[in-house]
Image 1 (cartoon, rainbow, N blue to C red):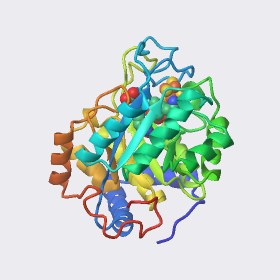
Image 2 (tube, helix red, strand yellow):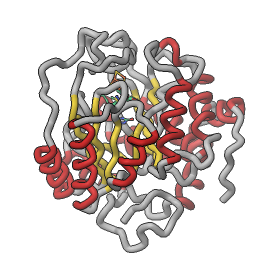
Image 3 (cartoon, rainbow, N blue to C red):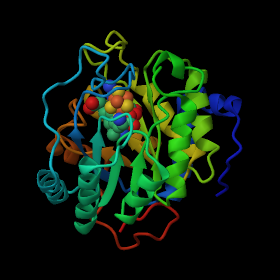
Image 4 (cartoon, rainbow, N blue to C red):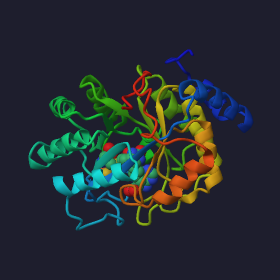
Length: 330
Ligand code: SAM
Ligand code: DTB
Ligand code: SF4
């Protein structure tokens, strides 16, 4: 399998525009080679620090610039977070992702607590992912030392569409944060959102930035906008689920070894559309009743979804774990 890092936006747009059956066929061929068992990683999310964020991301209910901002939710402490991680593990999750609604990480007690949470999650034998905004080299180094598996920092959209979505932080700053994560030896979780008024060329352009990274991000979350009341994007029409299928399939073709995560937006999709995404190459879902502040299908529904699709969840089958070039699956 040839893994390329020199994709042009035009080539990617041509993939996105293929007849759906053809696109699915090509994505399937890649997916079967890279993940012959069709295994799907279950990742649970927890918002540790919710709301009051200084950034003005137009999609985000946690920005202090929007009337949707959630106030008065106390920041969670180490023990309750680890209790949630244990519960997620018992429910079958293999990765535990923790979010902080921050513009950037600052040193001090909350950061020390974050490091303890990372250590605690790793001691449970789970992968640990953190998303907390920008960070310094030293903070990235300390997170790596604590055993952090992945840092999530999304590009969200194309460089061209970005200014219509966020004004308080530049695309370049995002890329620099990602580079710090890479340099520290932490795997990169980086993806975007569709349904924010972007064109097909914007989607191709976002994927071009991701697919020309070397190495590719180990994890690529593909979100469909959850249009939350009180955010500037509250009126956005829901995306056609087949658009999400196309985005997942194209990501799979471009980045064969990356974990493509079917992320926000599943609540508005029927079972068949979600199964099409699994067929198109999604090999992870967020698992648990809530994402950060919005809803997600419940655990029982997701168990039924995976059974109906005939795919296996991690960590049941870990015999050949860590055999491939992906991030550790043990
Ligand atoms: N503050 C940190 C940051 O922005 O890096 C971490 C938390 S932030 C909520 C994580 C990601 O969630 C965002 O980059 C965005 O891609 C996604 N997200 C947030 N709100 C969303 C929404 N309403 N619909 C879809 N995705 C959303
Ligand atoms: C990602 O790309 N999607 C997740 C995770 N990374 C952190 C977050 C989705 C958040 C959806 C809106 C909310 O629940 O607040
Ligand atoms: Fe803050 Fe992250 Fe929400 Fe942007 S996406 S407003 S940085 S919490």
